[in-house]
Length: 298
Length: 281
Image (tube, rainbow over all chains, first blue to last red):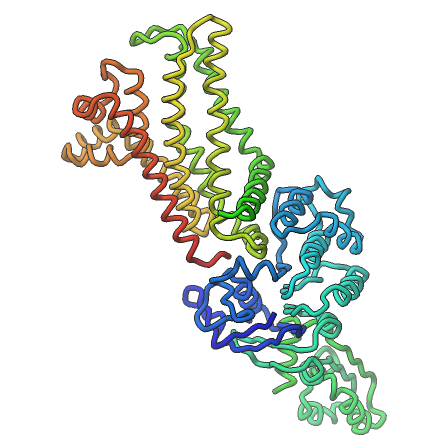
C-alpha cells in the first residue's frame, strides 16, 4: 500500500501539531518515523489510520483514510503505543478481533505462542491485568496475524525484553513480506533491523527523509568523554565542541561516522596527557539524544 | 446493513457487554431495582389502601414512582461516560484500527448501554406480578405492567440519548460527570410542584412553569404513569391536571411516552452526527 501526504496540517486547539508535512512512501517500503516527544509522530499515524481529520491531502493507495477508513482498515494493522486498558478478557478480545477481521483464532494463538504468550492459559485474564510486555506481545500477534498490506507500529517493542525483541525482529522479517511498514521508534536497534528508510519529524515538520544508512551516519550519535588533568588543552577542547563535565572530564556528542577520526585527532593532540577516553554509542533516540544530535549538528 | 456489518456490530456489542459485566454495573442496578421492590413490599405498601389502591398495582405504582427518579440517573451514568472513557482508555484506538465503522460502534454501544438497564426491568416487573399471583392469588395487572414498562423504556431511552450526547461532546470525564449530575438534578428537581415553588418565590409566570415542566421528560413520564392509575387526577399536579383535562387520559399517556422517546432520539442523533464527523481519538 503506498502512502502520499501533501501539506498535512493538524491543529489541536491552538497548537499546531503537524505543520505542512509532505511524504511519499511507495508500496512495500519499510520506513521509520522518528522524532522527539511531541514531534507529531503519533498524530501522523492516527491520521493515516483514519482516526483524525486534518487539512491537506492524505492518500493510501489513492483513497482518503478518513473518508474510507473502514475499507482501508481491512488492509491495515496497527499496534498502538499505549495498549487499551480493557476489563474484557484476552479470549474476548481475541474473539472480537478474529470475528471483525474474519481470522481464525488459532492463527492468532500460533503467532502469540512464538512470543511465549500462551493464549489458552491467559484466556480468562482481563487485558488490563496483563503486564505491559504481555499486552504488547498480544497486540503484535493480533497485528501480524491480519496479513495486512500496511503495518503501522507505534513503539512496538518498548515493553519487550531483549529475547522477545530478537524474536519480534525475526518473526517480523518472516511475516511482513511485501507489506508497507511505518514504524514509530526511538530505538536505533529497531531502525537498523526493520527499516530501509527514515523520516524524522521535529516540531511537526519533516527534517529528514532519506535512506537509513544516511540517517545513521549523519544523525546517530556517540557520546565522547575525554579525561585530562592538564588545563593547557582546555581551549583546544572548547574549540572542538567539548564542554566541561565532572572533575577533569570533558564531553561532547559526535556523529557515529566521525567518532574514529575525532579519536585519532585527540590522541595526536594530547600526546601522553590523556588520562582516559570513553566513547558510548547512543542506542535510543530519546529527547536527550535528540538534543545531543542537535549540538553535534551545531 | 450487510451480514458482515451485523457480525462486526455484534462483536463490538459483545465486547462492551463484557466491559459492563466486568464493571459490575449490571449487578449493581439489578440489585437496586430488586431492593426497591423489596423495600416497598416489606414496608407494607402491598397491603396499603391509601388513596384507594391495594395489592400489586399499588406496589408497582410506588415502585415505578421511585424508578422515575432513579432511572434517569442510571441511564445517564451508564451512557454518559462510555465514548469518552473508550477514547481515554484506548478502546477506540483498538476498535477503529479494525474494519469497524463508526455507525457499527455507536449503535452497538448505544444498544448495550440501553438494554442492560431495560432488560432487568422487563424481567423484574412481570416477575413481581407472577409472584403476587402465586403467593396471594391476585390477578396480575398485565395492562398496568405493560404501560409501566413502556414508560420506563421511553424514560430510559430519553436519558440514555442525553448521556450519549454528553459522552460524545465532552471529552473530559470529570466534566462529563458534572454535566450528567446537573442534567439529573435539573430534570428531577424540575417537576411541576418544584417549579411551582420557584414560581411563588421568583414570581415566574404560569406559562413559563408549564413550558419548562412540559419539556422535562421526567415530568412527562410521571404524568403518563399516573394517567395509567390515577382516576381522580388528585396527585397529578397542576400541569398534569391541566393536560389531563384538556387531552384526556389516553393522550396524556401517549404524550408522556412519546415526548421522552423523541428527546432520546433527538439527543442520540445529535451525538451520532458529532461522533461521525469528529476526531475519533
